[in-house]
Amino acid sequence: MSAALRLVNPQNTSQWDESDIKELAASSTRSAMEMVIRKYRQPLYFHARYIVKDHQEAYDLVQEVFIKAMRETRLFEEDFKIKAWLFRVTSNLCFNTVRNRKRRGALLDTMMRPEPFGADQLERIFCGEQQSEVMASLDELSDDHKQILLLRYYDDLSYAEIAEVLQVKLGTVMSRLSRARMRLMDVMQDTSLAN
Amino acid sequence: MDCLMISSRVAAFVDGELESCECERFVLHIETCDPCTQIVIQIEAQRFSPLSADQRRSICERGAFWGEMDTELNGHLDALVVAPVGPWHRRRVGLPVPMVVAYAAAILLAVVWGVQQQERAQLAELASEHLGQQLEKERRLAAQPGVITPPVSGDGSYKVVTYAPERASF
Ligand SMILES: [Zn+2]
Image (tube, rainbow over all chains, first blue to last red):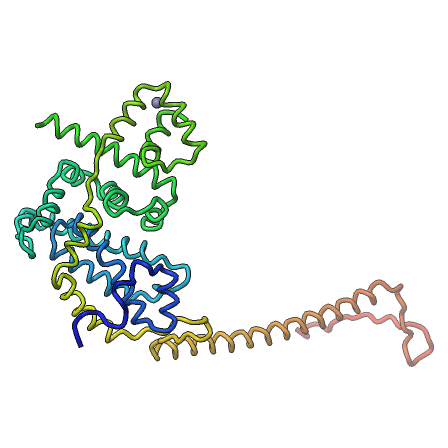
């Protein structure tokens, strides 16, 4: 059998929402888990990659998140927020990885690592974005501020979804996001003054 | 709405996430407050440029981008044994045997201890009831006017007895 995930049609994932997946889980946990993987691996990969800034690390971290999801017994329970849980776990793993890397002083080493699929146009777009002024300034922010800005403006999560990921109230999302943008504004002003 | 509130709602205002009444109060404030107007202008000027959906798809749908992950996760999926999700009374719960034995023993001990305590409580209750009855009986007797029972034998008169211990009897 091919290495690709079996049983479910990969074309269907965008049409499946969490309640459909939970319904599927009642008859086949494996199929439901495959659907979860297919539906969320791409957004999680980019979320991870914006934080760790390395393809292989982001890829491995997302894989680890799905292995954790398979062990999460509440995953298909009625009131469980699958997407919020996946983003929360991915964020935590990524920020831990970056912290550990900084502790080891290996940041420069990783940033110099070549991209695995060749520096084609799209990779260059990605790398260009990574090196943009805003992205560079995001790295100067606290983890909380960087996380909320990524979730909103790069991962395109709604305020309500962000509240679920961070397990905070909607008002807290609004105030944290505002503070993050004001802090980003200060950092960008400082950078432009320094240049 | 004051300047502090403006600084904690500016992102929601720019993103169009404020409710209409809050949005009105926001606008009313910035119309009369230059520093807050400047903040709104600067926040609005921030440009985030995430990859578009097409760019993301183009990166992830190339060749065997997910192949390595699929292979790895398939192995985990094959080994995956998850209890089917159904009504709570039909779900199977896998607990280690020592834990089950320990729980059972703890429950049994608790039941035995409970029964013993109940028996003790019943005995204590009976004893206190008996004591109460005794006390009540004695209280009634004490409350009655003194009736001195005449001696059974003799001439009906009381005999005065004096007691004088013999010397050196102790
Ligand atoms: Zn003001």
